[in-house]
Amino acid sequence: MLDDRARSIVRAIWQNGPQSRWELHQRLGISPNAAGEAAGQLVRDSILAELPAPIAKSGRPRVPLGIDAIRKHLVGVAIAPGEVQVVRCNLLGQAIEPATRVSAKRQDDVVQLAAGLLGQTLGRNCLAIGLSLPGFIDAKSRTILMSAALPGRKDIPLEPIFKAAKKLALVAENDMHALAARWLLSQTASGGQQDGKQISQEDVLLVQIDDGRLGAAVLINGRPNSGCAMGGNELGHFRFMAATETCYCGQTGCLERIVSSPFVNHEVPRTMNASLAALTQQHGSMNTIPAKLSAGYEIMFNHLVCALSNAVNFLRPHQLVLVSPLPRSKNFNDDLVSRIKGRLLAALSPRVRINFWEEPALAPAQNAACLALAELILGGWQSL
Image 1: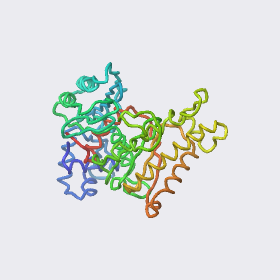
Image 2 (image 1 turned 45 degrees about the vertical axis):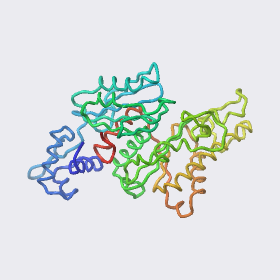
Image 3 (image 1 turned 120 degrees about the vertical axis):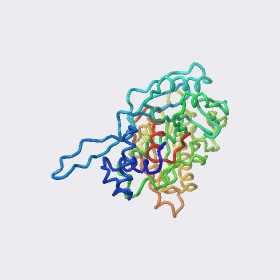
């Protein structure tokens, strides 16, 4: 999508704000002519834009360059169970208009539906495309190996989507890596550091926890590790000796079936059922709910702690980032961190940072667009 020099310029502006050509020369250690030529080409390609120059006391003012949020756009395509979403975003990752959401009449239609919506959304000013879906994508063969969007199906060709993309760069990854791309972009946009650490050089395990859905992504040196099955969205399929509903993968005992309302309610009369969202809010103060429900919730919580601590022990990331749309209490967050820390290897516990990312809810297609944006700015994300 960009060569290394051009990407380093775009990344410097993304991380540090508008920069003049002279500032880019100084920051990146390249000659003034090389910085000027590369920056000029990015302006001509509508990736950067010249901003109003500050009033100079003397001499010619240096013109700052910023990300061009007007002339080019990215398209995000998200395949989900029963529907497809498509959205156009600018080069700041902001949606240009609300996402288009279309339900699939049949599960087998989602790939063709996605290809059709992509073809309708593309414009001549589209720079690149991001595609996300739950499950495994084999980028080399351009197939979906397994997905919750197509339960029971294997090796589903993605060729219709690639044909609709024409010759544009397309970044295809699972939905958790799309979320991880957005998280990393949000961190690098704020200067690229957290707790004094350079985020783009860290190994990060990002885990999303929802009711009946749990996924993860691993970033190695700030780039996606697609080959790690444990981190590549399959943490939800850690299996335990627990009676659960059958998962879309065809097995029982999967963690994402344990972290669910049906599991915590399975021994409670229907009239006493409580949602997982309500229980996470009450965490630590459950003396008012039925004992069996409290016991089921505690079993769920212990399994969650066990899986997260084991994943950290195996992967040894610098940081564990937890994100969840579930409403939670401070007791829940504090107890989860405390119990995870208590199960880590002694040498790891003080070294691993555990943080919560209270991210604003966005359409999955906007996360998908972040895959293309991450490749543009950071590089190392799969581009086909």
